[in-house]
Image 1 (cartoon, one colour):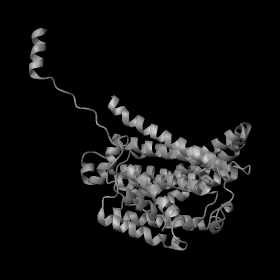
Image 2: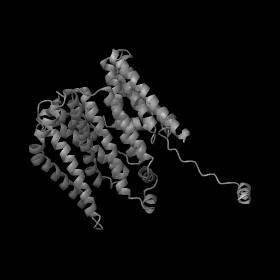
Image 3: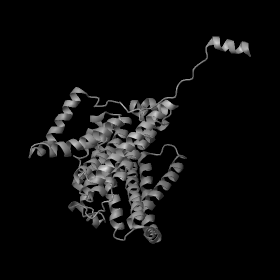
Image 4: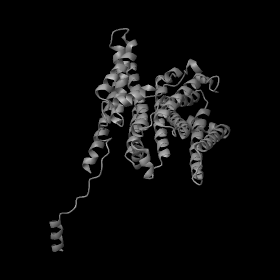
Length: 418
């Protein structure tokens, strides 16, 4: 037991040291705003890449849609806080109430559909879309008039610092929830496709999201997002405790999921879908679960990133950017959480730190040439990635020790003494 506890103690002790050191450096000003942004960006991209590693590395579904869900989380959480600081709680109420009602309706609909055999994928998709629209319609027409004043009164009675942190928490949860709902609806029909076709479909999803963000003030009723001009006026509420806590939460949730029976089912689908189905694993549900959980991680990272930059532009979420998490996952090693986190920070430090600051002036324009060459060399020399499937002891699955059988002589001695 003591040996099994040692990796956990070491992990949390090292994490606490890292948290305290960076917090002190930020407090005394030894880390300026530029390097602060690099660290926060590294944590955000690591969360996005961890979600992709769950989908692609552990579940085997090739996806290029992470930046689409990253964008949904960023814009949703930003809109909640943007309206809140201007005295409008409607976005907060709509997202929270709509998400809760949607989850409740999904649970009821799932129970209802179990009573029928042979329901087609498109029929299921249509029903889930309808109950989602119904949930958010109720949130808009009933939730805002009833709960809007209540939210304003209750949170307004609290100290400003406390109410700000509560609203920020709700905004992050709302962005992650909406990203999860979107991924669930998208995944129902699309996950039926093969891996390559699924990758193309998710790339198309990212392009669709980017086009919608370009037209939020025309096609969509969100003039505050300003479409292709970019959204400004987002409160800069992201702090190091929020960044560190969010990254730690993602790591712990993903680690515990992978060490559970659900995680074993997720990995078994990657290894052989037919064999997994033959032993009783619901392959479709397992794929959707991994896809939704990975997208929730991306939505949470989007909220963190939006409130660090205090500015969002659709160009930051185009399909070219969607390759970054894939490169990080492949570079660090498929099925390695350790490699994903380390490579996520290394990637941002390399692109925005070393290649931008410490190389001759004008060389920064060659960054997009240098890092594909580095990736190409790495793939030729070490195709399994830098870390392969290596994990630090805390993230590695620890099996319980096998029971030791008593020796025959010892058993005879015990019988004689009895």
